[in-house]
Length: 403
Ligand SMILES: Cc1ncc(COP(=O)(O)O)c(C=O)c1O
Image 1 (cartoon, rainbow, N blue to C red):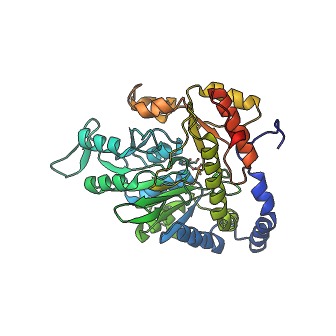
Image 2: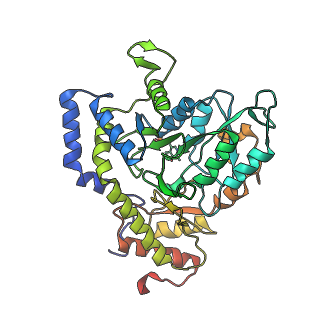
Image 3: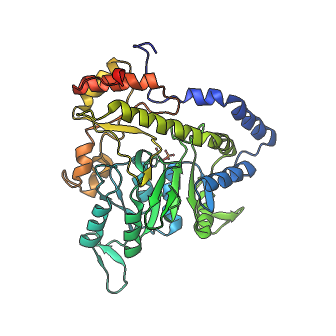
């Protein structure tokens, strides 16, 4: 490639051009049946995605935020409860908690994986909560609110340390809703069970987003929740459809959170390509790793033995993130930041009363992270240019041309 050609952060056009005939056939089918909402195309996708995630049920939804919110509600989180999650995530995770009527409690992340640190969860549960002798409920010491659920976020495509999180959840009787919105097909090796487990099949419910830029993306908004619990699935189906199981008979007040047939059809087509696309991402990550080698001044993603990362994002850390982004932008290389301001320091959550220093790892990494170009069709030469420019900036010998 020419040395001044732009390296995009993400290429959403190429896969759609490649799949255009199949995607147009979906449109034709929907137009000819006028089955726009629900129906066989949604059910087919739900069956296929459940199979892909190794779960019994999948409930198609309007987006990933609804998936986290409906999952919490259907699993049994009540208004006034406390739900524990991380601050280093997209705000949808915590919007879903608040909108389910619950309080948000943040714990810090593991500096190596950027996912929830089980030791910090343990510390919160053991030191900042107590059991109410009258009801047996676990209460937050300060707010006296019952702590009922934990939402680990499989950030960037890497599954959180679920053995440790599940052990704590069992010990403290917490529901577990996995925010797998960035982790389609990611896997975790459970030492306890001596087997690989898919993201979204480990807790009571898994929540997925199919926002277009996700590893499995719709051509618009879409989401889903996966579970092995038929009763939770039944409740989520009701919640997504105005609280009705039978038309116009409303057992509860619900929402309009359904997946439409067109998106389900597109997703069924794309799901057949997801394994190849994931392989493309994993190979690109391996190439980045090889090109960076042992360069100092840049921290590359950790790939622990217990995890098969699907690289929704390829995030590195440097001390001067702003400088690096400018250096790369000058070389026509696009980058992103996921996410610049931790949630506990956002204006929207000022009322929660967190102070600087409360979540030291989250606060340390937030100004250092930068997401490099990552998508299945990313070319080796594009990556070599990215790495050359990063190494040039951090003052390391440029390795890529000699490896
Ligand atoms: C970690 C995480 N949780 C939740 C969501 C919400 O998904 P959606 O945008 O489909 O509502 C996203 C999507 O960006 C996400 O990245």
